[in-house]
Image (cartoon, rainbow, N blue to C red; front, side, top):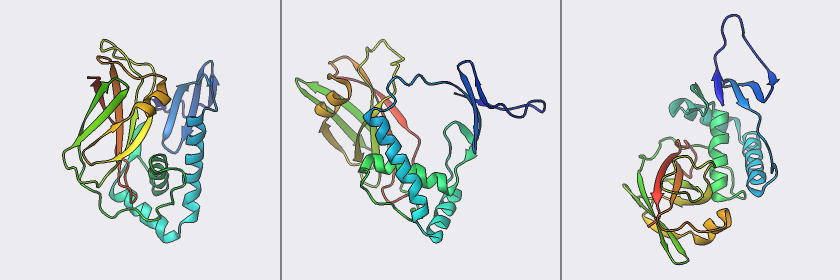
Length: 229
């Protein structure tokens, strides 16, 4: 997807030309290829729609005072649109972004958090490792602070060869953890996502995003490239 900046002669384009669709929203103008929706109603896609719908509806369930707190938080701890770094998210957008992340990690049955934090925890860093021993696939994580103040959604890719740089698919949601040193056998979770376990010497990408479980910012995703040992 490309971000568009129009000139004085052309101020707006909407609709589709060939395989390209031109759109605009609160965060600017974009041009993107039309997606080829081969499977438009997979379980993950349906879950994403449900989570987004619940997050959006939540804004109307909180009080005016709650909404004012989210607006203040958005100004105090600014976040920006994914495809337009110059466009700051509003309190509403911050509320929806945090809740969609929270519901994905904690489950669709989790309650709304009406008020965000007034101060954010210190950002933590992590080193992941992935070990295969027969039918056991262990994901280990070691944090610098190791204090449990962050919730983390972890995403993982299919296996690919060490010589490959482009894997062709986005990592899929694996599980939610906290920033406490630990390890977990992810064999059943991984097999359910990709149909097989990665072999020793193959590579997977791990992406992760930190957010406090009491309402607030969602930090930008970071990634690590792991060789299975």
